[in-house]
Amino acid sequence: MSSKILPRIRKLILLALLGACFYAFGYIHGSLTRLPAGTDYQSDAKHQFIQQTQTPSIPRDHASGKLIPIFNDPDRIVSQIRVVKDDLLEYHVCRYENVCVSPNETLLFTTTSEAAAELEMKYSKCYKKSRSSLSALDRKFCDCFSVQVGYRFFAQDPQRPLPAFETIPTYLIYNWLPHHHLSHFAFSTVHFHSVLQHQQFYSLPKFKRVIFQDLPPDGLTDYEKAMWDIILAGGKLESLQEIQFLRRNASMQCYKSIYSSKQSEVYARSKADIDVFKKSAEKVLGLDITNRECPPSRTLLLVRSNGTIQGNRMRTMVNQWHVMKLLEKKGLTQVDVLDMNGTMSLRDQAHMISRYGLIISSHSSQLTNLLFAHNNAAVMEVGIIYKPAFRNLGLMARTFYINSVGHKPERVGYWYRGFYPRISRECNFTRMAQGDVSSCPMSTKEIEAMKNSDYRVHLEYFEKDLDLALNFLEGKCWRSAGWIL
Image 1: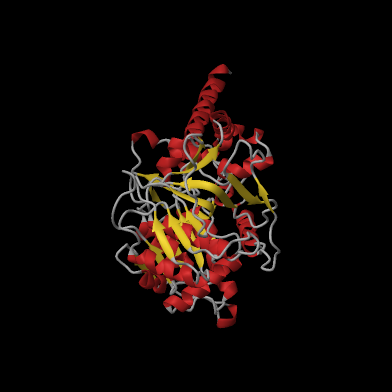
Image 2 (image 1 turned 135 degrees about the horizontal axis):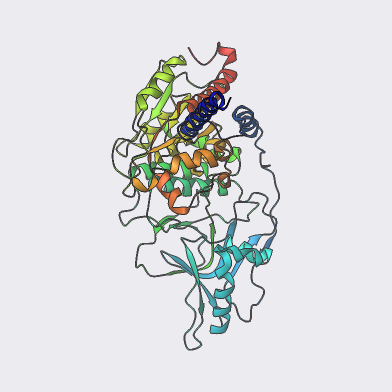
C-alpha cells in the first residue's frame, strides 16, 4: 500500500514546488505588467476625468480682502507683514513693511536682540513637523517665505539709525531655487501675472518697479524677454517704470512696503487667470489657441536630445520605437517627434505647440510651453513617479492633463536594480497619478534618483492612459466627425 502512495506524495510535492517557483517568478517578473492589487484603473481614470472637468472657478468680482498684521508688538518689532485674513484665492500675497531685501534673504528689524532671538527660534518651526504647534496667524508668516529664500530678524543698533526705506510701489519675484532656470522664470512671472488679476482683493498698488532675485548677471534671455512682453500686456502694467535684478553680493535694498507671493509650483489658482494670459499671448505672438473647441488632429512626442540632469540621464524614453508603433496602432499617423531646445525663440515654440491636439512628453522644461497649447488639447506627462510642477499649468491652461506613471527606470545603477519590482508591489500608481504621493513609500534619495532617470514605458499602463486621452479628444470633436482623421 505504502509503495503506491509514497510515489504519488512525492509527485504532488514536486508539482507543488514547481508551482511555487512559477508563482514566485511570475510575481517578481509579472509585477512589471500588473497594476497593484485592488486598483481599479478605469474607475480612477474616470474620476480623474470628472475632477478635471469640474475644477471650481474663482469669482472675478470679489471685494477687497481684509489685511491683518502678523506682529502685534510694535514696541519690540519695527518691521511688519500684512496678509489677507481669509485668502480664498490662496495666492498668499504678503506685504512686507520696513524691510530690506538681498539676493537670498529678507531682513526684518526688531528693537532688541532678545526679540530677534525669540522670533528666530519661534519661526524656525516653519519648515519642520513642529509647524503644527504654531498659531494660524504664525503659519501665515511661514507662508510668506520658503526654504530656499529665508528671512532674518536683525536687532536695531541704538547707535545707528535704521536705513532709509524707499516708497516706490515694488513687487519682489524672489529666488525660490538655488539656480536660475527658464521654466522657473516662466512659472514665477506667470504666477505674478495671475496675482495681478486680483489687484482689488489684495489691495495692490500700481507697481512702478519689479525686482527679480534669481536672474543671472546677464539679465533676461530673448525667450524671457518675449515672455515678459506677454506679462506686461496681460497684467496691465502701464505704470511700470523699471525692472531690477538683485545680483550676488549686491547691497541690500530697503522698502517702506514691498509685495511678494510665495510660489509653490502654482502658475494660477483659476483657469480664468490663465485665460487672460493666453488671450494676451494670442495678441503678442499672433496665435489662435482659445477660439475652437476641437484642437488640431496632430500628435507631438517631445523628446530630450542633449544634456544631462544633475549627473543623471535625460529622462529618455528608451523604448520610443514601441511607443510609436502603439500610436500607429491607435490610428495616429500624424506624429511628430521634436526637441524644442533653447535655440528656438518663444514665438517659434508657441506656434509649434499650438499645432497639436495630443502632446506626449517626459517631465521637461519644454512643458512650460503648455501656456500656448490649444484649449482642450490632451497632455500625457510620462515617467516613473508623479511630479506636480506642470500638472497645475496643464489644468489651468484648459488642457486634459494625465500623469502617466509607474514606468520602469533604466540605467539607474546597481543600488536601484530592485527598486522597480518593490514599488510595483507597494505603490498605487493610479492614486499617485492623482497627486497622492503618499500612496508610494519611497525615501528622499529614491525620489531624487527616479525624478531624473531614463525609463522604459510600460505599454499596458501607457495604452490605458492614451485611450483616456483619445476618448476625451473624440468627445470634444464629435461635431467635426471626431479627432482621429
